[in-house]
Length: 337
Image (cartoon, rainbow, N blue to C red):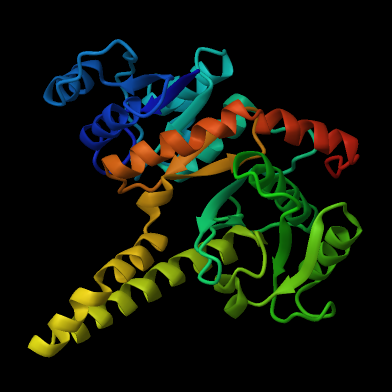
């Protein structure tokens, strides 16, 4: 299998991208193709003292920055690492595309170049969300690909998230919850009420509405919401967790007695910190397009790149895209006119 890696995407490209590829190649049996500015990437490979033959470079002189307008960038920067990489995935040169680049451009590019799976109205970004009860991660869909969603889209998110968790995480019959103002069926907007009915009538293991306060408790495996709500949940959780860790750090380093006590709980604190660290999870799958695509955080370091590659490989090897395509046909969930 060949992993296509966007060598110019992210705040620390190509340095951290290349370092992550070198770390990953030692742990996998697959190949990695880094797409980007050849001289810069080869320079980093040389710095990393890589001398193997399972990492190759494909030249792409242009770069899509975080400030570029997504649609314009995809149409005008045909020789960018992101566009070249997606086209390589489309033509079968590689089996998985991983990028830390412009999120909007990646979503738009995946939709325009790879195309949507028939029956999927809007692709979604699925983000890993920590579960503080079982310490098993959940999947939040959508994390920001579409700010507004129709009821049918929310049903699609539940379906795609369930398939991903079953095939990639080997979690049978995952529980699907719909983020809402209250647990009652009658709560919410007209969209969430409609989505509730559609999810209830589906073959999914739908457990009903889920309030935001219950999301971190692991009440469901697939957290369904529109991209606006999903992105707010993720960023609020990140902000709260960072604030809590800062307060704890200040408390345990306040005096000598607390410093001594901190030594006994250091390992537990580090374990908890890792649960909230996006770098441990690597990347988020883009679901609903005709090809496996993984999106990494823009500020990803080598650790996140390594983990995104490793965690993304089952996405391709387990044929998740094909299974979603088949499920959409079997369930006769056809795109609304």
